[in-house]
Image 1 (tube, helix red, strand yellow):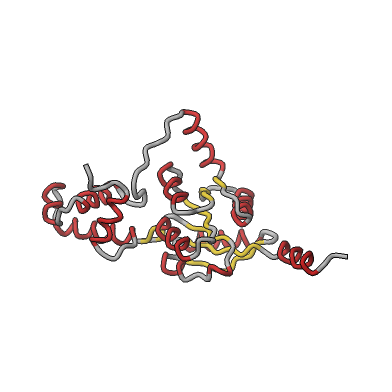
Image 2 (tube, one colour):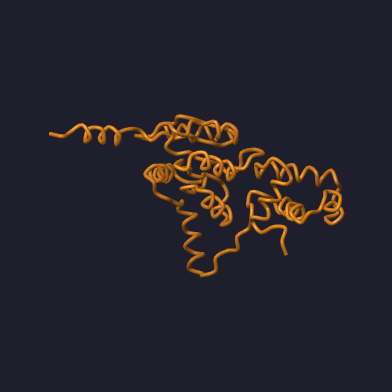
Length: 227
């Protein structure tokens, strides 16, 4: 006769996988939520359109967070980093349009458990969600193929710091980390001081840091601002 512990395990095994969808595009977010709700053993318990809403999700009652990389003015990478800082057991599956190697590496470095492209089939989405909920690390077929190709070539791509930043934003951050003020940066890059101020403000937002000094610390940790 099965004991109480066996019964509890059976109940736990039959519990649905609780998922939250984080994406700033309502059509995609609602469509993904509808797809997940249609799958047996999976239920959507939360949705978020930006980083603030994502960080307000009750992580203790969520098994898998589906995370987009672009959340309007926010970065899905930084949102993932903060989620994992708050709850190291949180399981994040990135679902994005970006398939470049730098984005994949950046997501895995901050603790994401999976990386899937938005063109994935319903079957691929289901497999990825179940795998991440089960504690596995998974890459979508297209991403995995790129990873295998890179390994086969034996020439791993050079990591670009802060892949969520544009080339211009990264260039400005590098100069900030070198100690230059906005006027100096404007002269060096042949930009207006107002443009530089706007770029610096965008960088602070994307990196989720409070001020310029904190951005300098993050930049130098990633190798920017040094010769």
